[in-house]
Length: 285
Image (cartoon, rainbow, N blue to C red):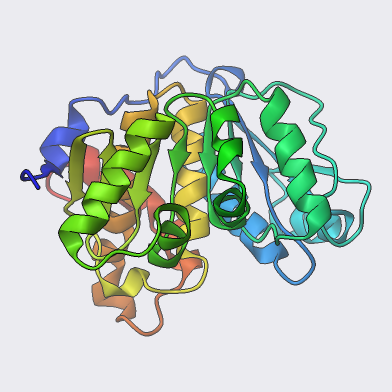
């Protein structure tokens, strides 16, 4: 395996776009987060909130009916559209064409949800981030990957990656298989871990931020929201993925002296996103 390119602050600043002082919410992108099922609506909350906090102008969450009040109360800034089904998604009909969509956190793998994902992929034209149960469903139906747009971003943790590419016996085999998968389906793969790597066909990028505090429930949901937010703001998929993993990791580096490893949670990532942005643009912070 050739040496990976490093995702450093210097690298990220080459494509980071500061907010235009004259912008308005309509110019900052509209993202949709499709997530949640009974008992896992928190995943939709975390992904939607982090999407908004990444600078996205408008965020709509698409959730089963059981998530409606939870979303409206916990994140008043996010709009909510519901499936006709109560406990899990069965039909994904969006009242808008967003600039980007993140799908998968807390979705579940019910048969009705699998069919809904297939129908969604068949008609969707928006840039995509696929995570969690969306990946688990696709691992069972690999031919459906032909339906995803080129440069779609997949964000598997190690077990989800294994379901997609098969078992590996060494680190080099893992990368070989991931590269082959990325080339075959023309997708970008964010290999979550310590460290996180991004595979774009034969190119490998290694993130330089983050620590063990990120090994906590919901951490991946917030990453999905952040990357989706950057896609909606007009970043090219490879830059949205790089900026997303860099800032996501940076929140843990900034927070760790205050929280310690044990009490850092996914909500801490969201809380420290603002400080991560400031660290990016203000060298002495």
